[in-house]
Image 1: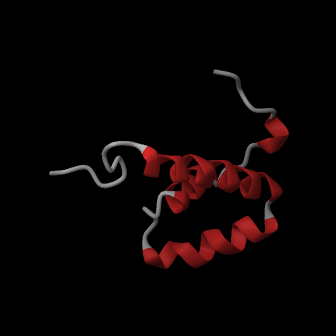
Image 2 (image 1 turned 90 degrees about the horizontal axis):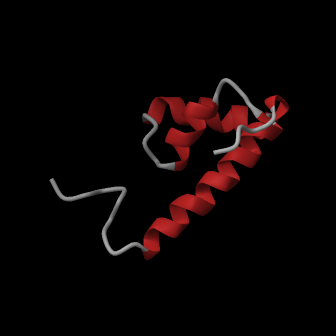
Length: 68
């Protein structure tokens, strides 16, 4: 796995990932949405993650909501 260039990294990447997976608590959503609107690195990360999450739809099981 290749590391991203430092200039593309942001301290909010973990929250952006949770947001993309719709796993962020409701009270944190406006904060990360505001941050993403201002952060080019997080905008790019969110677009990449959304593409990945959309690809899960084609998987045979629901990887985002597996059976208990």
